[in-house]
Structures are given as structure tokens and as C-alpha cells.
Length: 157
Image (cartoon, rainbow, N blue to C red; front, side):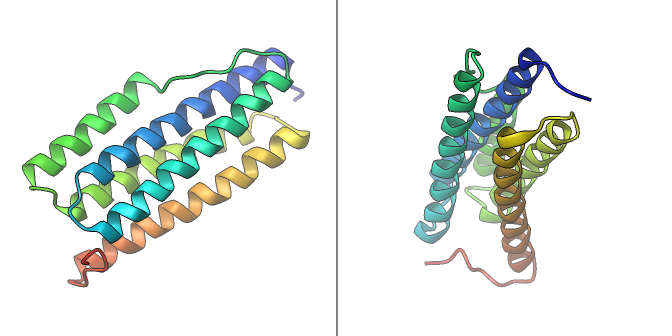
């Protein structure tokens, strides 16, 4: 299936939302952890998501579309959950990392949906590169969560 330019822009704008959501989610998470090491990891992921959004916005413009410049309502609810989890657990790093892992799983699903839509060429290469980086981030969040569950605390300063 070959996508029209309009369909491609629509899919890219959905991914821009995902990236902006991820950026804000990671920044929210970083504000709610006490460990400077874990905060650094989370801020680095926020910066990377911002870069992904910028790359996708440039691609939308290259295709003649208007790029998305804000996240989604669903992500606002997810960020609210992170804030709730941290306030209930008093900044419990395990709960915050688990919330980040959930966010990455949702991002991966959205990226996979776009990749299966028939998007091709340089746009597909860009999306695949970002998808792989998000997959690595999800795996790192899962690893951190598992370490914490096992009583190891890599997040401690």
C-alpha cells in the first residue's frame, strides 16, 4: 500500500505527539526522583525525545505539511499518573521507572503501527532508527525496574 503525502504527514504528526509526550513524561519523572544519577538518565531521554520530534517535524515540512507542536491529551493523563505515583510513593524510583517503561511500550506500539502502514523511503528509515532507540530505552527502563525489584538500587547516588 502506498501512502498519500497527506496520510504520511498524518502518521508523522502522530509520532511527533508521541515524542513530545515522551519528552514531557521524562521531564516530569526526572523532577520526581531524588537520585541525581537517575535524574540524569531521565533528562537524557527527554532531550532525545525532543530531538526525535524535531527530526519528524522537519520531515513533515519537507513533505509540505504542517508539523504538530504539542503532545496528546492521553499523555497528559500519563504524566499525571507519574506525578500521582511519585507523590503517593514519595518519589519511589521503582514506580517512576515502571511508569516510564509503560510510556515506552505505548510509544513502541505507535511506531510499529506507523511502520506497518506502508510508509517508505527515507521517512521509513528515520522512523526505524527512532523506533530502535525507543526500544533500547524501554529495555533500559525494564532493566532498571528489574534491578530495583531484586533489591539492587542502581539509582542511588
